Length: 245
Image 1 (cartoon, rainbow, N blue to C red):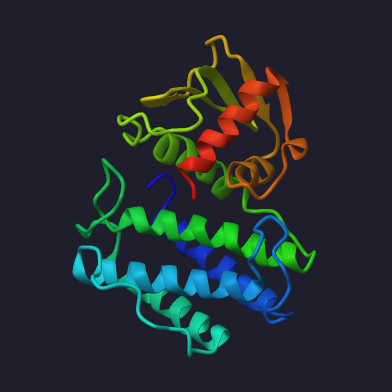
Image 2: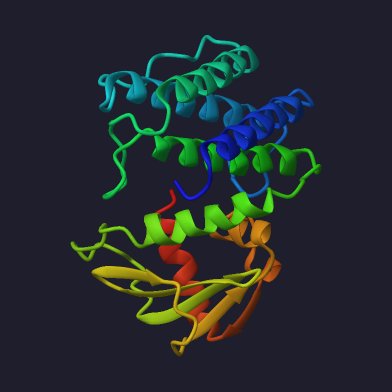
């Protein structure tokens, strides 16, 4: 974990409650950055993610079979039930329980404190965007989310097979409020450092919420500031999309 367990739980409580509040403005509203998704899609998806992680924490492994048939469940009651249950499951597990995760280095329940909190923050914004009532993500959480996307999801050992369609082949830096991540990606690897001295082909910068939402495909490139090669920025965004979908 990068932040404290109490901080993650506080953010998870607040953002999950806000998602429920906004969802009650209407389930049929379209989510602009996610074609084909409505607010109901967000609610059902988030509830299913919560239930999946509850089972992982209970079993210590991936549940199989999965998922259960939840189509008959009313979406808001399903979400409210799952929201309460994931908070209870995380609190009960604490942060040092050994369990399955997709992190190469962190096989503890603390991983899911971070992941569920950041998952919820992004989907809370999805629901807000559908109703044009978007609010910022907590600054520290957004910076932590940028680090998760870049250091874990982009920088993980996923690329050895060379099956990316966006090799980038350039050094790109992401900067938000004095925090920088320098990335170098080719067809078979991606490395991420906090080096600020290396020469880069492009830099993407802005406030933490906007950068995080851009990384997750919830903001267009014109919402962030860029310098250097537009082609490198485009290729970098495409590479990030491969490891966040």
